[in-house]
Amino acid sequence: MSAAVSILPAPQLAALNDAYRKAVARRRLRTLFVVVACFAALFVAALGAEVNLRTFIEKIGNFGSYFDRIFTLEAGTRVWTDVNEWFWGWKKWLSLLGETVLISYVGTLIGAVLAFGLNFLAAENTAPSAPLRFAVRRFMEFCRTVPDIVFALIFVIAFGLGPMAGVLAIAIHCVGALGKLYGEIVENIDMKPVEGIRSTGAGWVDCMRFAVLPQVAAGFASYTLLRFEINVRGASVMGFVGAGGIGQELVVAVRKFYYSDVSAILLMIIVAVFIIDIGTGWLRGRLFGKEARS
Amino acid sequence: MSRQPDTNTQELRGRYPDVFNRPMASRAGVPAILVAALALFIFGLNELDFSPARMWTGLRELGWITMMMIPPNPGSSLPAYLHAMGETLSIALLGTTLAAVFALPVSLLAARNVIPSAWLRFPVRRFLDSIRGVDTLIWALVWINVVGLGPFAGVLAIAISDFGAFGKLFSEAIEAADKKQVEGIRASGGSAMHEIRFGLMPQVLPVIAGQVLYFIESNTRSATIIGIVGAGGIGLQLAEQIRVLEWQKVSFLILMILVAVAAIDWISSRLRFAIIGRRAVA
Image 1 (cartoon, chains in turn green, red):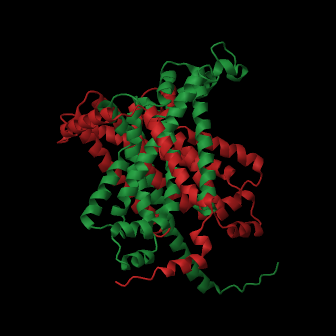
Image 2 (spheres, chains in turn red, purple; image 1 turned 180 degrees about the vertical axis):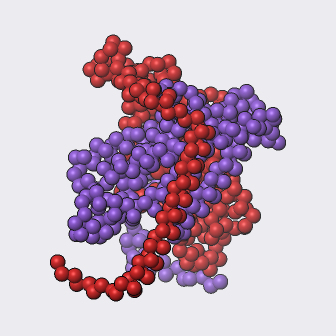
């Protein structure tokens, strides 16, 4: 192959090479520094989290054998050889699963309605007053930073055991999460319709209803469906603290070593989450076209 | 204000018949959905034992609890709480890192532009989906059975549930990468591994780093709760104090969580801006 590129004379080339090497060396040094910092942080974290590799290596076999055990019936055969025995409690579990989905639905709806009311007060372009906006924003931040299961723990004591605590916990968390997303949509709208409506002498509520709402309704619905899906997952563990749904049954099965029950309930949860995932995805695609999916 | 003459609407009706006389199906659609949603909502309230009386007593109780929470006071257990908080942060950091390290190779297998064959991609994606379908708390329960109570179970729980999430997010980032660089490497005689290393990775790594940092923040939140089932960290203290109704300590712990999450949020968003620039942060 003949070289088509003319090579520079050596002195010029040396200067360029020098500069190049210096630049690369500086970058390498920085990367090295970052890597060392990362490893140091990880090392400290490993100490803090009591990571013990020896226990891990000794016990990692348990992980495999745990899955082996949860797929084995008491009779010693594989679970799928006797589906009737495996899903012996399917009626109870199915109704609990229904309760889980219902908790998520009611919680999401309450949360969405409250977030809907609040977000117009929190968005920069529609907020009627700055102090109110500040207060609403801090409130929503609080709702979404405290994990929903912590709310559930407290509500179980205030409202008693049962799904009501779970619903309220999900609703509160939902207010924070949806309020933020809604507010972001509202901040991105075109303000011209709002000015148009305002110029006819309409009040704040009318402006929201006729200028803002038509622009944001599709985005709101899309986020709400997404949140519903997330909340189904969240509701499946509400039972861990006694706040209703299938989690209670699962935690009992895990703690009392009813192995095949664990796999049956887990499988039902996964399938339910799948179905809802696909269902809401399809619905969002139908309602708002492909681009609103992500 | 002068009023428009009424004949104008008549004329408009004539001019735009499809605006004023929409077909029945599209006019009834939205109210029908709303009515159905409301009916399901009321059925749900009924099914889940909601009642005004319960709501009222519950709210009163809640008001009382809130009163008891003020002022937040850790009592004498502040060192224990700080230690637990450190544990929580360690769990979040370590779990996220482990997940990212293991998810990167798997996400390559799930990306369309790396593995064109749907037969290999499909099972990998379903595998990641089913891992994501199980909540972190459930994974924590499983790991407690394997490695025993303690923060290590928490690390593994966070790692495995994030593994599913990262696998999906990374593979999407890889699919969104520009294929010109990859083709350039191939044209200059690079092997498949070279294509990934020099064509894909430089494009994908900043995106991935941004996602990992974001997850460290959201995992700080998850790590605060896995203690509730016994997997270490501040959740354990929180659940215990709630059970024994020490409300002042509870409110102090919640405040600690809020502050820690805000701090991690601040740090990770600063780092994210430093890595990928302000505009690329979605």
